[in-house]
Length: 192
Image (cartoon, rainbow, N blue to C red; front, side, top):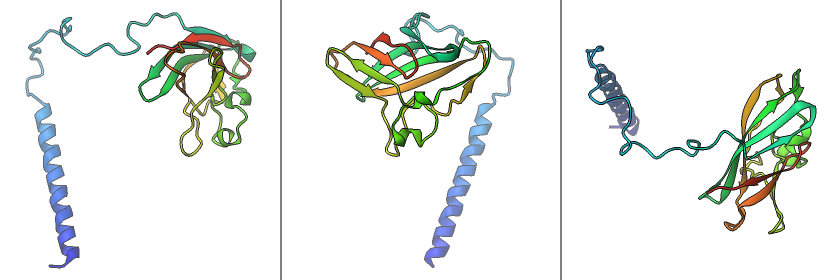
């Protein structure tokens, strides 16, 4: 047999196996008795279930609120140290003005490589005043900032969830200043 015939036959066998698996999966999804109630109650007991997520149990109060120009505000909701050696800052960017606001280009920062990748929050920094270090938003291997990107305008009253990732300061550093161009400076506590 030729190699071409063998590879064609092998692909056909794989396709047949995948189709059979999908058919069995679909057939197994229906029980035939849609009115039957589940055997277990809908509420979870306190002894079973998964651990709460990072957002469960957090208060509604932000860690900090920083005000920007033209009615923009950023509520920083969490700053979590991850085991991978970075800190993820989450927040809500909102427009408190009575009209749509164009996001200032300054929020992307002034690094050519970051600006080339479009509008972002790449200009954000964390400042460890005790350690005398400034931490910039991380970039991937193509120079794209590890932050929310593509924000151009926010309508009046709208709110947008955003994130930024930074290199982690030493584990002894738990409080840093958050800085974003055109916004006031806020102090945040790092958890984790």
